[in-house]
Image 1 (cartoon, rainbow, N blue to C red):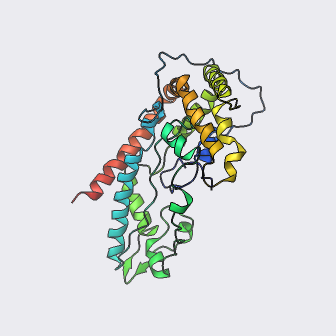
Image 2 (cartoon, rainbow, N blue to C red):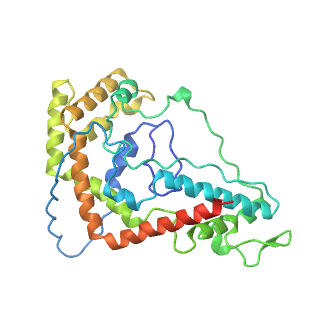
Image 3 (cartoon, rainbow, N blue to C red):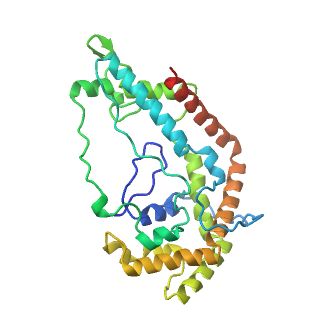
Amino acid sequence: MRSAAPAPVRRSVRSVGAPVIAALLALGGAVTGCASSGPAPAPAAAPSVDAVPTLATADGRALPIARFLISPDEDRRIEAARTALIGSCMKRFGFDYAPPALGTKPDLMTRRYYLTDAASAAAQGYHWGPSADQRQPSAAPQPPAPELQAVLGHGRGGPDSSTEPAGRTHNGVAIPPGGCLGEADDTLTRGGGILQDDAGALEINGRGFTDSMADGRVKAAFAAWSRCMKEKGQTYASPVDAVRDERWFSSPTATAPEIAAATADVDCKQRNNVVGIWFAVETAYQNRAVQADAKRLEQARKAIDVTLANAAAAKAP
């Protein structure tokens, strides 16, 4: 099975046991263009790169936009507070209920530059996660009983929130607008907080990746990688082509040819410092974009901090 791209918003459910390919390839489609009736603007000059680190992997590194996105740790803190708020609200109505646990938000750098771990390549090729026989099927979540659902609600702005009648009660207790989900979200966003990543920050995150892929310095690194791969009997123009090889789609686990290609892929990345060059170039593009939109991005950071403060207060004894 091929996973969907790691969703940028904080409420995404983690995909388990799927190969990395679809999640990574989707990074290039993160930006949508706008049609224009006028002539296309001249492309901006490529930003300069001050230094290129030598990197086998980008794990543990941070891109400039990361500061303006909800991190996995921040996401966990917010979700823990939200769970506690919903449970407390539901208890007022006589329900012992907690929302289902959501998947962990993936780190921004997880396989951002495709496969870089030699051990993973040797064991799983381009497949990512536990094997099929290790995965346990999960039962589809059952909808809550009608009375419980009426109290739980759909949150502020949920699909049915606009049709909920005002003044609803349960056992004589007024149901908050949007139900307990709405109350929890209102508490966490009080004072200007946000529960999802800022759209502009997400756009910069996707555009930086796309721009780096088209940059001459990254293309030159890909060309060196391709020559290295050719010497190992692997014919691919870029790491993207290696991941996209249709042969890998036909098997739920890595085959011997896939492992051979993946192992060569990682070695050639390391020999030619592909990750270091790619990371440096993308950092330069993101730095330029962040500087151009600094005021609005700082507002997004403040909004995240408001939510985190509200989450900490909600969990305080």
